[in-house]
Length: 351
Image (cartoon, rainbow, N blue to C red):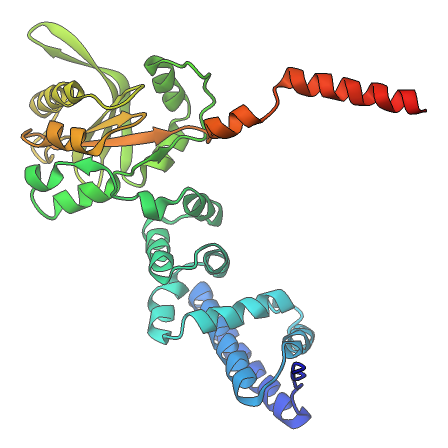
């Protein structure tokens, strides 16, 4: 059965829509002096609602959006945002967010193009809502939001194995759990294949701004190879931070390979030492994070089970590499060079 051709709006009905939108846009322009972004996002949602309702009720086709775009840009030449592409975003925005209260209280609190990015890249409503809330709290730019989405932050947040529920009071235990990710994405580092712990530490310090962004809001860098003296013997902490929201020191120890049970004992010692020598009157209990290349869940749980100090274990990922099976199927540089040379010789022989 041939598809039913989409109807274009009747002139009188269309003009009524256009006049109504002109009035609404002018009203929004006045209010925008007080709350530019919120009014703009709400206006776009209302425009999207109007388009959506007219298309559903009257059977108007997609071409009405092109016509609206042309007429609105002619009427408001100094106002950007009425391109065909943007009007389609408005329609999708209204279709996805049917609750005006949600739009007003959340979506309208972030810039319009942040919302467009979320519509493009995040399909799950709960996940999209989480990114909106994090953008509001952390003040993410559009580029930072895009990076966080691409790194799968929603899935990684709070996924570390910890003993926080047993060692920290609520609600600090819940907040501490949420600040620790698993895995940490360290794609910004350029390290050789056989790097050592000290090289990893130095690279993180050299890229401390990127590392702080990956750690998340609230972390303040105190120092690396931070000295702690116990019984006249000096010990050095790989990375020491202070978390502003948790009001506590955070100790990070870097490990090259898989988690081993003895790592937790050493971290327990460091947390006790920092609590004794650095923790101030207004500070909460210090937290330790052991950052490994890999871990086994049950091994970590047993290692942390009876410790009295709050410790978490996470993994880190460097630049994503090809799976070994795929690596083996790809030609080496030498093989490629040989094949290219043979192909060039074959072409030359044919000429």
